[in-house]
Length: 307
Image 1: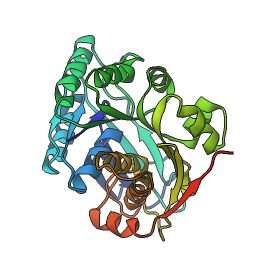
Image 2 (image 1 turned 45 degrees about the vertical axis):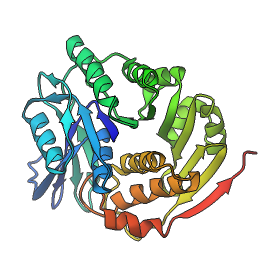
Image 3 (image 1 turned 30 degrees about the horizontal axis):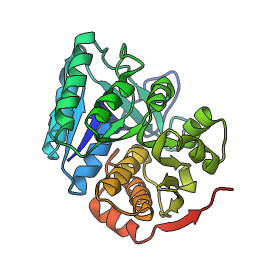
């Protein structure tokens, strides 16, 4: 099993407006809701590809129950502490021909109490025993300690389990101080940490702390450093419908490739095919196996050399 961790789940809402005018009432013509949060997207992608996964999160209020039920309907068991308040909602507005198009509004979500945090750590420790790999993704609720991810990494090290992390800011900095197996980050996060826009230079720096570095640069694709190789992988798609959750699906592809013991080139191919497949449909943070399988045959792979 691959254990997925989503400390801050959400309900992702697509809202369509025929037009948008400032200072007056604007009516939403249509909206759709999806289970969201970075780790939720990872879990859904893995499950769609037939991989057993369990989802550890912090759940709060009616929105938390809705997210859990939606995940369970997809065959994803959910566990973790119940928090006061409500899980956040994240809105993506679509309005053709206005500056509102693809604008996102993110609610704050619940706060983490000390006893709930301890429950989160213990639940992670218990469920990791039945997993070969853990994927840790996204933000944490308010009042969580800055050491949250590094605390989970300590537990994983005690059990000699691999961890793939996708986060940013001070939590990432503290996690890097510990060192761990795999990291997914984008070009902006890499620049903030490594003070360089050169992906090869960033991978060289980060490889001192982690074994696998997956650095994404939007349309430029994926730069994957692993087992002494740096692979560039990319795939072209005709039309992008939505990019929400594409990075999370890419993380899922990397994780599944590692879990299956694939080559570095194949892991990179999984990553970009998963990420691109998510762009093809309106379902937020979701991919379809048929799209992934088709895209895998179209991925372009190139091995790069450090200068």
